[in-house]
Amino acid sequence: MTSKWIKCTLTEGKKPIRVNMALAATYVPHGVGTRIWIPGDQIGIDVVEMPEQIDAAIADALEDAPQA
Picture 1 (cartoon, rainbow, N blue to C red):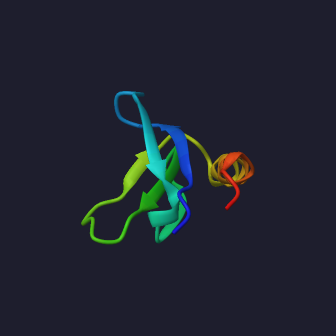
Picture 2 (cartoon, rainbow, N blue to C red; picture 1 turned 90 degrees about the vertical axis):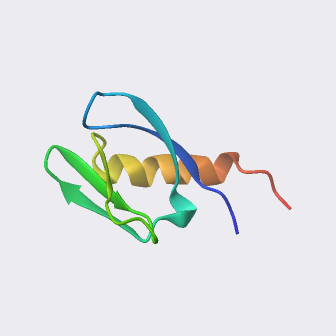
């Protein structure tokens, strides 16, 4: 499985977090940002970035990924 690590900012506390989006089931607009759902978690991760910003960060992560 390809890793898609991106840097986000938690809504609560405004602390940085790295999320492997390859594991995310979905992400949806929520409040002032986005909620990222990871299978197996009972709650989502709320970040300040909007879905469009996450899409761009995923695209950048894929461009920077080593080629096999």
